[in-house]
Amino acid sequence: MRYRLNDEEVVSESLDGEVIVVHLQSGTYYSMLGSAADIWGALLGGWSTEEIADRLAQGAVRDSIGADVTQFVATLAAENLLVPTDNTPSVCRVEFLPCAAYATPELQIYTDMQELLLVDPIHEVTEEGWPIRAEKGK
Amino acid sequence: MIDPADVFKAAELAFEAAAARSDVEVRYRVAGRVLALRFGGSALAAKLLPAFAHLEPVESAPADLVICSWDDVSSEVSLAEFMPEADRHGLKYVEGSVRLAWEFDSRSLQAYDPGRCLALFRIPAIEELAVWEQGAPFRRILHWWSAGLGLQLVHGAAVGTKAGGALLVGRGGSGKSTTALACVGSSLGYVADDYCLLEPGTPSRVHSIYGSGKADSASIARLPYLADAFRASPIDQQGKSIIFIAEHVPQAILYSFPLRAVVVPKIVPGVACRAEVLPRGEALRALAPSTLFQMPGDRAKSLSRMSALIRDLPCFRLYIGNDPAAAQPFLEAIIAGRGLSS
Image 1 (spheres, chains in turn purple, green):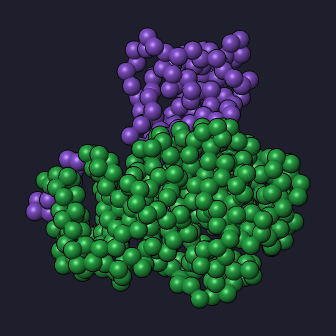
Image 2 (cartoon, each protein chain N blue to C red):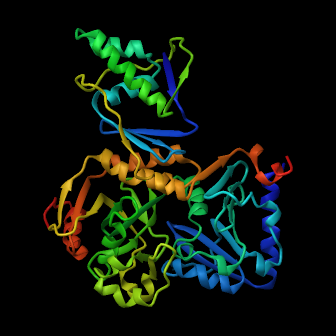
Image 3 (cartoon, rainbow over the protein chains, first blue to last red):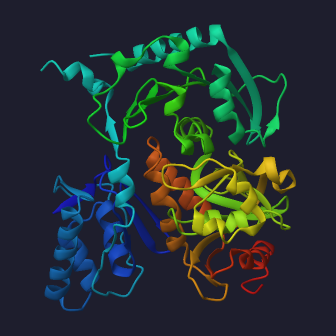
């Protein structure tokens, strides 16, 4: 399975080996280090879950790493950070060279800013959706 | 369906109606650009101008951005027909040829036409203007405008000297405002306690927008130098008092400085003040989410700009105990590149 960034709701940056992902609608933000950051970069670079597991395994126990990667990617998708995309291998797939020695990938989840959005949520709408008043007669 | 451009046009006409009765205009220099503030009524000007009064006034240079402000009562033109439904909280934002943001609770409208560098800020009545808005007016407008110039409005405090300074970042309550305010009256100048403008470059620079300072009663107790000023100030809905630094300690004001470090303060009662090196990712986590969640529009670019800025700077965590003034020598050492000791 291949994924792309849920770029309508999510922004991300990588800095000194740490990936920071912000979900703009939920108010949750995330941090990934080591293998987690490697996997995130590979997913956004067009690699499939299976290809990432193969590359990370490199002589280690493929089944265990495959299960780790599958579970980790499922978590990313469940958090709505990624959305499934066409499973066709991308011709412009970027090179994937893991920076970290393999360790079970972890997603750090921060919810301390959610209250800010609960009090002051931002409802982004397209021009077609503006304004609500026009819908009142429905 | 109503075209956002029509909303903008209607709002502009409403402002002209208000300005026909009373038109106040003041120009200030912000980040090297000229900001013209027009008010349809002197009463609203009196509420919103103090936040900018510390800035360098400009007499006749052409404006890079004009912000027109008014209230429905003064203009006698109601924009109610363009109001979204009122049974929601937060902000409704639409981005197209113009940008519009309605705040449901305050029933205010902020609008920006990037093609004309013209912005509009409308409230229903002066009496409904929130105290916090007086401390940091037009934040979203200034975010949209500055982003178009490659600048970044951030949720952060800033102190330093003309030779260099530090950006203090962290979520509300982390201690950045208290730390910045504790530097007032010291050798470190005051640029901001809550919001400032970052200009990427080599080096990147921080620019002042607002001359306000906010503190709750617990923080005021730890700011004896400013206690009298806070005692006479208005209090916002969250129980924070707002002062304008230039009214009390004008020599503390600094317009801009080259950025030397990013500092994440952490108040821990009872501990001795100390600093430690912080991974840059952690500094970005302290800066970016609270900025992004407050500023709609251009958010992917905003995160990219903040990340690029932090990538080039040393980052520190600064533990602050009961006396925030103890942070000042640590900040001076960090800014001077002398490391972690005071």
